[in-house]
Image (cartoon, rainbow, N blue to C red; front, side, top):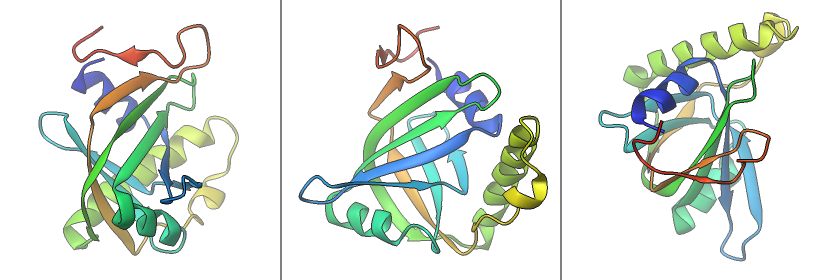
Length: 156
């Protein structure tokens, strides 16, 4: 897996779910409303809607542990990124383009599967928080015999 392949999966309108945990290891999951691959591919910025992400944001402020899985909806190609939240801040107008671009691609991707755009457009997306995370490890999550395997940086 290289940064270009990860960026390609994300740009395809992938489904993006973000997982966190409490101090007592209770899991939480929320849907991202946008993703930006930062230059170099070693960090991602995830945009988490304020309306649905209060618990996730509280967990991140508490312990910084984060995992995100990106699934290309047309073929279920999935990659999980694990790392640490290094910045949590309210998203600003400069971030809105990334959210709108991601949601347009996601809306188009799920429309192919029969989900009407009017439903996807009803999802809460703004206001949101920007969470910049390090990508410390990548794992194959595509269903099949290789699921769970660690992806080495630069592997095809």
